[in-house]
Length: 176
Image 1: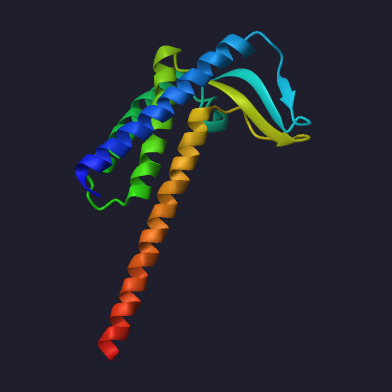
Image 2: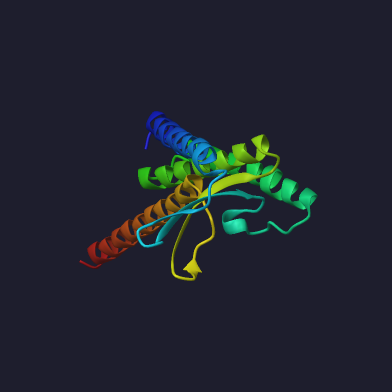
């Protein structure tokens, strides 16, 4: 994938991720912040306002404030910058891998923006589950991070499968 296409794909997908997440969070603040949870589809899906000090599904929320700040703002910022640099400058990445990294970085960056703007907190507002078996509260950025990781893994596995097929094809050609 040439550099211009890679940069364009990254910019468009990351910007869409950040934009969609930030817009839905603003809507959630306005519509959900002072209301009780709203249930849909026989309580399969809930909308409820939450401020999350931790990572995905509140992991690490009980860490001391300084540790959370260093980890979720400092270290995550460095990690996202590294992933973005890798996606921008690695000419070996296939389009699916670039798309996965763009969504992952966009979602991560949007939550990182929240931490900077809201004193280390991320706004969450969605919850899914059946009966007492429920997810934690999450947001659109979390969906982009998960979807991006899955796309990246799918891209890697399809690249590996193509490489292995080429290897076996060349072995068969060598024997004939």
